[in-house]
Image (cartoon, helix red, strand yellow):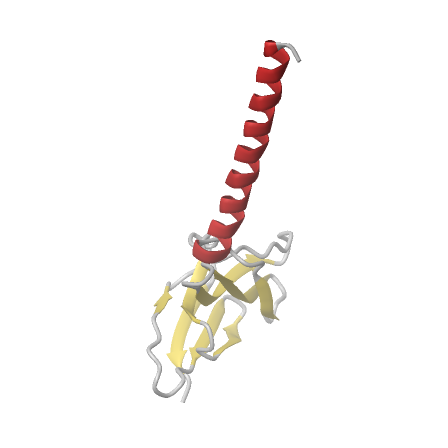
Length: 146
C-alpha cells in the first residue's frame, strides 16, 4: 500500500471515531444535563367573545437535574396555535409555576383572564405573574385557589 493511501485511510478512521465520539457525548450531554421535552397543551379556554384563548402548557427538560413548569399564554384566536416550550415562551407567558401547582383558567370578561393556583401541601412553589398579556389587550388576575 502506498504511504499516501495509508495516511488517508488512517485519517479517515480517526475522523470517523472522532465524529462518533462527539455525537455520543452530544446525545449523552443532552439526556443528562439539558434539552427540552416536547411541551404539551394541558388546557385551552376561549374567551367569552371568542377573540382570545388562554393556553395552559406543561414543559419539562434538563435531563437528570430536571425542571418542569406549567405556564399560561394568551393568544389571539386568529393566531396559528403554536405550543412554545418554557424557555421560548418567556415573552408571552402571563403566569408560570412549578408543575403540579394546580392551575385553573377562567374568563371574568372578554378581555379579563382569571388564573387560579393551588399549592400542594408541604411543597415549595415558585411562580411569576404578569398583569397583562404581551400585546396588553387582556388583563390577567391571579388568585390563590382555596
